[in-house]
Length: 403
Image 1 (tube, rainbow, N blue to C red):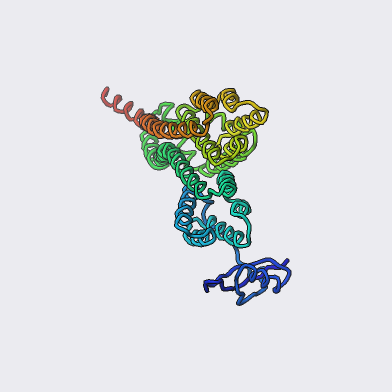
Image 2: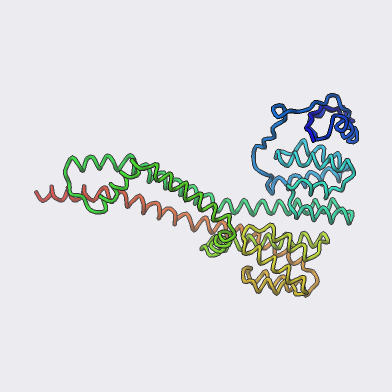
């Protein structure tokens, strides 16, 4: 197979450029004509003339998918065909990877493939969205599926935003603390060290330790950098291993304040996702399996996969949920009530709304609780360094007073 670059015109007169892999130019021409394009120029591409596809930026986020679903619904409800809607979305979508995927989906739909299969081929759309599109196409309610997914992604984006809000303040303060310590050790402490050497003052142990620390940071900074990079690399490798994933997931849940926030966030996502899928007609077994893939914590993900296995054996969802011991009692109780009432998706939706509010309150409480804690820790570190410098000076002043 060879790579060919082409310039073609579509039915609206718009010029399109791209590349295809085919056996020869004639095959490329046939493919373009089958897609409704009129080829103007076809050239074989060498290694140096091929387009280098460098994607800038990361993959699409929950908010990108939310906008995509919302715009798709608005267009189709206004009478725009799916192909035309995808064409317009491919031009309006801001995320480059999603834009490229939507354009490919449009071409596949034009060839006669279903929307769900076309989206599945791109390997970029979440399983949750694919399942909802499958269900929507099967039931003839594609608009409703996209509407529900728009709401789901909006809620999910809000949850992630709250989690980032809870993390960003401590991260900023920690960076500032490290910078303050570095400045004191590299600029402030050395000046006092020279002064003490000139005066020949006997230094306390705490001051000697700080002076040696300052000297090490100034003259051996490359060792600190090397150890930091090596430690970060080893930590990342360990975190990506199966053992590391379990270890860090367990530590996440045990963290004070943060652990409860993660549990509440996972509970909200679980309830929202399962409810959304069930309302679209997706079987409970598949809904739980898809929901498991959305969980960032490995322990919670494995617990939901175990729930799926139990459901396949005829066990109600509420039993393995309660047995895993990871979800709050309210999640288990509401799930059981929903099973008994025959309205599990309705009760899970209400449960999701409840935990959305809980996550917001927990985030506010976490930020409020961490502010004084971080300030106290930072003040203690800076105070320790200042005390180490001031101790010999105070001793020197005491000696002068005695004279």
